[in-house]
Length: 187
Image 1 (cartoon, helix red, strand yellow):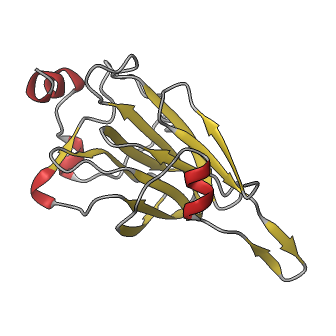
Image 2 (cartoon, one colour):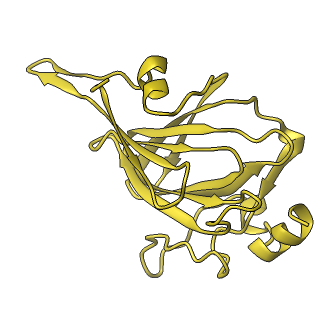
Image 3 (cartoon, rainbow, N blue to C red):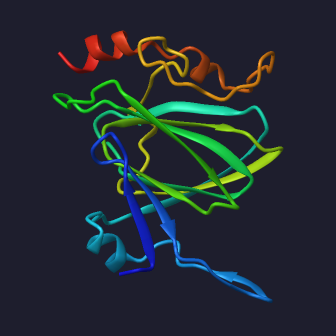
């Protein structure tokens, strides 16, 4: 192994991943994904879809999840900087409803592995950010779910500067809270 450093988070199944970066006068090289290295680190996934988005400062996307077709995700930032958050929605989990956040940037080159049955979202810290992620299942638009980003029962500490107006879709502004999610999906 040695090509990636995998750090477990306080929530089982979440991992922060740091690839080996090889730099010289020309720039740098790194492997962003190598099945064998990830498998050796205990992350044995088959990814079927890659996605990329661009957002400007102040954009908050999330908290999203797929209901019947949950996805494992491997996320990273290729330009700029974001605060990325994941919330444990796994029924019976000791950390159900808990969250973990990490700053991902083009400078730190960190990746964040988020397993199935987590809600996921991010907030753009830089003037502009490009966000890329791999998924283990295809996106099903009719299967989308979400939880309100600022739900007090979860309490994510988004690093939003005081007075900043967030840029969000109407859908993301109107998701229900964690209690509604629990009542609807986790009976």
